[in-house]
Image (cartoon, rainbow, N blue to C red; front, side, top):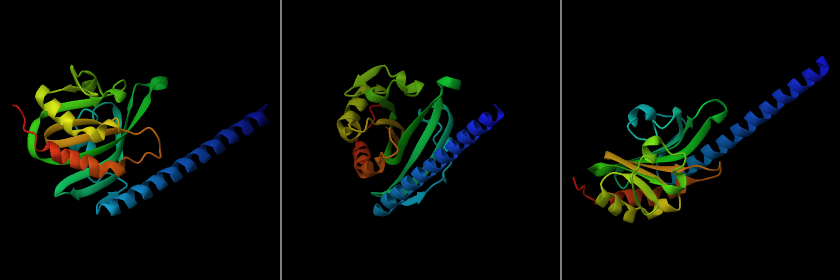
Length: 210
């Protein structure tokens, strides 16, 4: 009986080691892919967080949407003269056996002028969205939202690049954050960075109704 237990324990440990090795290789491949994409766009890449994201963007719904927020694979620099940051982000919701890890690609860009606060969350991702997003009382196109109706309609008209990505958007002052759910390790949301940046640039022409 003792020998059987030892064999089972060794098997479990070996399986865990293989699992960690595979995960490490997968993460390394993703980092190399994102590094290449950053180079194509004349941006910088850091595997860690040089900007203290959980503190800097704490006011955004997704950052405080759960516990254990963690970011990595940061691409950053300037596109069209505006500061842009893109990174992998995950957090946990629930506890114990019901704990779920949520994975997103986040794109943060500074706008030319402040807009009224607005939070627009894609219907395809609403079930497990942050609480603030699920409290959106209004709807436009494929987003539930909280904010000014006319402003939401104008933003939705500019936001076609987000529809196919199941992407969501929050704006606070001059900072816009796009949230793209990551559903597979091979998903490359970075290839959409320029389209999203163009969309956010067009949003800067929308004046708040305040």
